[in-house]
Image (tube, rainbow, N blue to C red; front, side):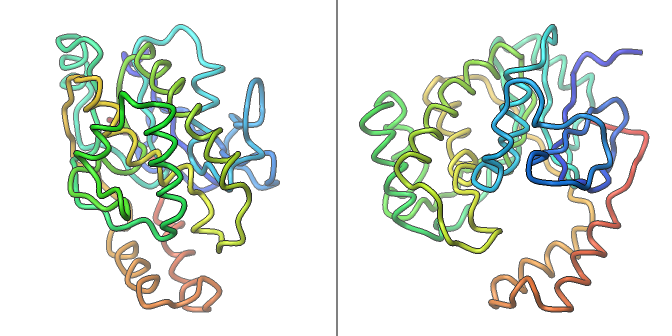
Length: 261
């Protein structure tokens, strides 16, 4: 039976948790040779080669440009999902025109590379001025920190709203790439377009006064994730043998299941 919500799940060749009717998208496929699932972000109209700077957004771009005839879209990641039932989600989206279901707002830290954040702010101020008041309302213009960030680049919304959002988001991202260019940051820090997009989703919804429902996220392997975050905070390098082992354990915790949404 076809779901009312078309769910797409970004993955880097890891098993996806709670997959049900979802379609895993192998992101960054143009630069990889290890795949589990058949759908890849390097087919059709795509920006797969840009994945190290866009992260999961290359999967979102692929959906925007290549998916047709779907009324509602859910975009999430291989290791996390919304703890909301599909019936409740559909009921909200049908009752709230142009509505969005997003992750519960939380405090976000300063962006690690301040100059990247300042370039983002300047682009919004100069090229997308209608969004600037919401940026100032939600985040510090000094460092990008705030307390109302709908995190994770995950959402459920109509395809029409997704298309409108992507027009603006990827316009901003193209300008970011033109101005910031390539970086020599470590791999986990390179995806500055994805980091800015996490913040921009909240800005987009606020500026357009769109209906919003917040939902909690469930993380597969939450204890392992917390351990990895502490290790990163302490400056333990990703090449450390223990960190590599923990990452492998975390990846193995992600598995196929019979439930989604």
